[in-house]
Length: 200
Image (cartoon, rainbow, N blue to C red):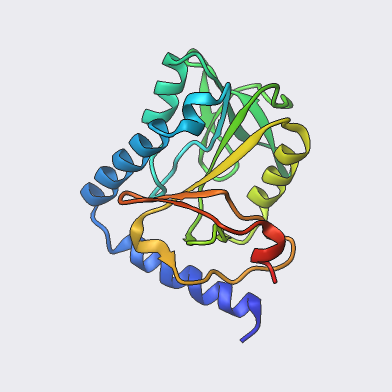
């Protein structure tokens, strides 16, 4: 099988595993995952949090965002600008509206850049224990991570995922970017390899 075919097969498998969880199981797991992120040294030490606005069966992020606001951290979220994602600062008082894929976005905001120590929270359909990530196939978060790494002076990335969607090895291409830590409802897995080693 080609890498593209392996990715396609794993997406189907991962979506089936996540769909096999009940809504209550996903909610409980999301709470544990958010608690683990919030209890990490990386969260404690960061000044800014890049985080997606959760949708559908993704690991929930609402509690994490609310806590970041209370802790007076700057919250950055992805918004669609044309055919690509841009960054927007997200504040509690923002008016929200569905974006390109029906995902809520803050209205009239885009084009900000990181300005301090950044913790990036990244979704995925699947991860492995080396931090390799499988997304939905658009490459959006690979480009976001590449942009964040180019602009943030100090960044660490967390991939959040249910235990059910952690695989032995996620197939990747040379342009796929992984994460530093994979956080599930039962453990936080620190990747031992960088992207060059992961993509060999």
